[in-house]
Figure 1: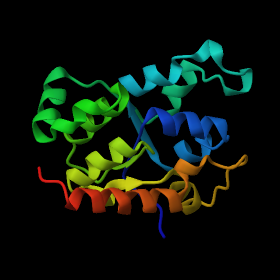
Figure 2: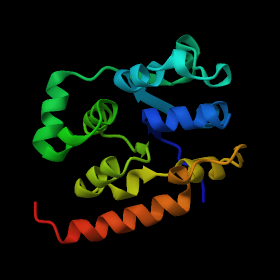
Figure 3: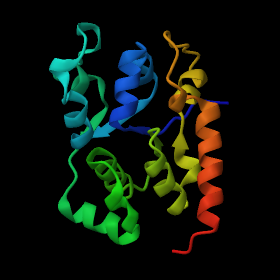
Figure 4: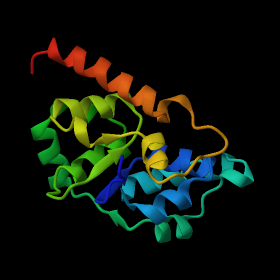
Length: 172
């Protein structure tokens, strides 16, 4: 599969996992990787509790991202009006979806949280939800140590199928 050529929106979990597996540089050098302010803030929370090799420098993080977007209250309100269950997401994911829904370009979103994946399905954006392993495989990067299971392509595809099945039985 050819790698994605548009913007890649990443959540806090994806940023942390890339740093844990030393794949952040490969990801950000190949993809136009973007985040929202809230995800950057969440990434840096707990900084003092991480082992030295897992600490993420704020200046380097911001420099490595193609863009860090502020999310206005109006954008959050519009996102909630479009899909009320966005309110149930963690703050970073909530802001990331609010930002994503303002865009007209060909973005994809990488984040393993089941609630966030469910929002994407409910919004009809399943094809824009991508796994970290799939992104890294597409650019020929093999992370070491292994990615945690929720970042694997197989887990991602199975979770999307399961959530889509659940959604067919739920009325909006």
